[in-house]
Length: 124
Image (cartoon, rainbow, N blue to C red):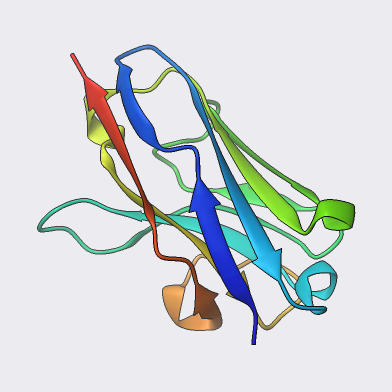
């Protein structure tokens, strides 16, 4: 079982940037895809970004393309989400998730391990 702990959330003004980190415990981190999801109050969980087991392949939700960037450091068991040009619609709890496959897919059901979430609030 992989345990995931997110950090880096907080309050930021519109147009600003944040970088989220997710540290994983367990030996399987480097062999599975990782993803970031978010959930705003009253809304369904939304795929934000995913990265393959070796970092060679990434994919993004349409609402964040060109603004967010996902990366990973397998030596540190860490996945990152760099968020730029933040807007009010990006306000949500952000979750790190570990899949059981090599390549990231945008479906929450494909991810068996989840962090506790970190709040990101963007103010106008």
